[in-house]
Structures are given as C-alpha cells and as structure tokens.
Image (cartoon, rainbow, N blue to C red; front, side, top):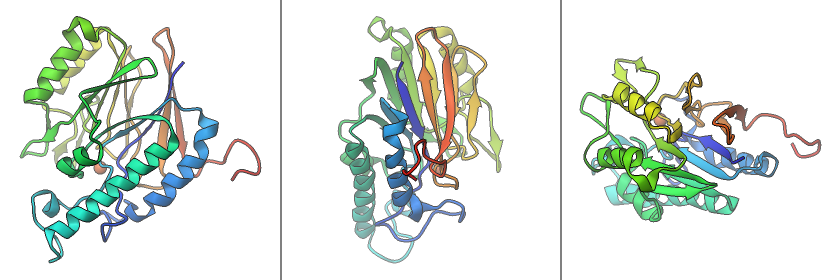
Amino acid sequence: MPRILHLTDLHLRHHQPGSAEPAIRLSRAMPEMLERLALKLPDLDIDVVVISGDLLDVPDEVIVSGSPDGRAHEDWLAEVERDFGLIRGWLSDTGIDYVVCPGNHDHEPLFRRIFPEAADFVDAAGIRFFCFWDELGSDRQPRRTAARRVLFEDALTLPQHNVPQIHVQHYTIDPPTLSNGAHYEYLDAAEFKRRIDASGRVRAVLSGHYHPGILIQDGAVLYSGPPAFCEAPHRFRVYDLAGDGGFLVENHSVTDPMKESGKT
Ligand SMILES: [Fe+2]
C-alpha cells in the first residue's frame, strides 16, 4: 500500500532576503523545518513525497522581471535559483521518489531549470501522478488552459492512461472557496470535479494555494490540500492508498513527538 507524504506552500526564502507576508508565513524557518521533517521520514515509511506549489516566496516584482528593493533583477534570480536548489537538494537527500509542481509564488522558468525532469506525468509507487502547471487569471481565479487542458483530457480518456492516477496542481477543485475576494478553485472547477469523479481513474487530487487547507473525503476521490507548511505548527499529510479504493489520511506536523523515545 503506497504511502504518500504531501506538503505544500513552503514560501521558503533562505538565499533570497526578507520573508513572505503576512508574518505568519515563516519563510526563513523553512530550512530548519525541512531538516526536522527529514528526521521523521524513517518512521513514516514514505514511498512518494508530493509538494504542490509555492515552494518559494518569490516577490511578484521578480516574477514579472523587476526588483522590489533596488537590487538588480539578476541578483534576485540567482538567489531564487539557489533557494530552488536547496529544496531539490533536500528532496534528493531523502532518497524517496518525489513529485513537484510550481505555484503562483514560484518563478516558473527557474523552477523548470532546477527540476528539469519535471514532466506532465510521473509514475511512482504504482500510481501515475499528473502535474498541472496552471496559472491565475487577471481576476486571481485559477485557469487550466491550452496544453494543460489537453493533458487533463488525455489523462481521463486515453487508453494508455487507464491506470490509477493522482492529480497534482497548486490550485483547488473542491470545495468552492472564496476568500479575501478571490476564488481559490478553478473557473471550471465544477466541470473538472464531475469529469474526475466519473473517470474511475483518479484516486486523489492534491492541491495547495488555500493556506487553511482543504479535505473532501466523502466520495471515491480524495480532494486534499494540507494547511500551508510555512505556518506553525508546519503541517503535512500522509495518505495510505489501499487497493480497494479506500484511503487513510493522517495529519502530522513537524512539532509532533517522534514515535520512539530518544529521537526527539
Ligand atoms: Fe501559498
């Protein structure tokens, strides 16, 4: 039974200066929290690690080719690249298969440079993980368009993809969520959900973006986004996907006590 660890929305800044806003997003604590998470991995017996976007907190000005502080844009890019490299190094050091996709606070061209193996889908632990690099519209509501829409259709309909699937993307599909005047779910979320639920292929839809987290567990498909890892107590989830279509969701945080004494 594959076990999947899912964390999201780290909003990490280490080589980049400053921190995400608001202040509850503890960008600069992320390297330490990742180290603490790594110590828990042997006990958790994980087969695949999933990170569903906002690995970093890149300032909006940098994403659109500017700078928020008067320093050269290129200096920021070098720091962003090193911060992506920090997370890639952490993932590599775990020795566990991983699936990552960017969020709206990541810098997509540098994300692709540091994770060149990132592809439309990845097979791991007997599951096909589809990765949707979607985007926000000008109204801040997520959109799945063009090649990503084709990928979605292919995943649900092509014979060669008739295998157990997990869909990974930054944005949410279910439940509809309106917060601070913005929709967190896709513009066509209701249609996506109907198609996914009817496909018989998709076991779970794993998201980020909505920092309080989401969990819909009442049907054949799990819709889950853990609370943002950047906020204390730095939560993540572990999923056990059983052969009978059921699954178990465990909520964890890096501050949970370790299982065995002497390892805290
Ligand atoms: Fe985020």
